[in-house]
Image 1 (cartoon, rainbow, N blue to C red):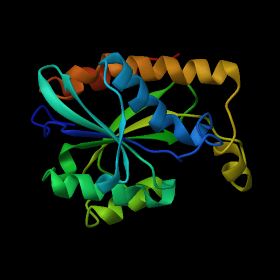
Image 2: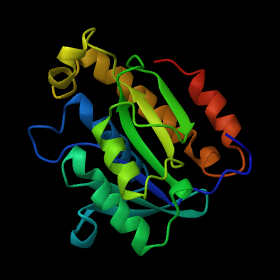
Image 3: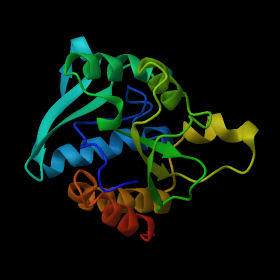
Image 4: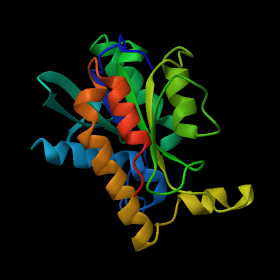
Length: 198
């Protein structure tokens, strides 16, 4: 994470569309983008050509596009690739927000580049960006069920009220530090987020 990091022009939340999934752990990325839009008085609108719900906001004087794909998680890259291509946004100017099993609820981490760690949304994103992994990720902890065989059921169920409050608290903190994360103060934003615990 360097002070010369590319400016972020697109923020994408990962999740699954449909009422049956909207409150499940796997949709933490959607929750972030929805809350970010609310904070800026924006409404996510259906955009057919981008297979998603999209909006534009000004953050710290910088125009940023928001996107929640309406494909399923394992096809998220279709929407991300379509918008990135249309607006000529390079991978390093994209922030992808997703749920993270390896972090407890209430913890968030910003990370540039890396693999997919078995996350189907990240897998699809990497593939759609020509195997470029250099996009920024905001990892929102949801905790781990303890056994890998329980992961699918776990991510597709609702967190407890206490867990949801912790996830919402770290979402609010990640939104608070976002203006710094978008510009030359990214290392300051990273430090503040990484020392936060709900």
